[in-house]
Amino acid sequence: MEIGTLFLKSNSTGIITFSELDWITTHQSNFTRLEEAIAIKLGRKLDAGSINIGFRLKS
Image (cartoon, rainbow, N blue to C red):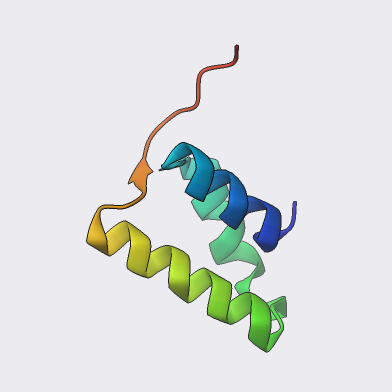
């Protein structure tokens, strides 16, 4: 998984899952500055309510 792909998926669906949040927290020590900025942006979107924590249904 990559943080950029996760960011795009979360923006398009409006949802981030608990497993994705767990992945971010376990890998954040290895992030580059750009990846850190993306993670911060995801956090801000969560705080603002633009992205919700939930489950994606498979179609």
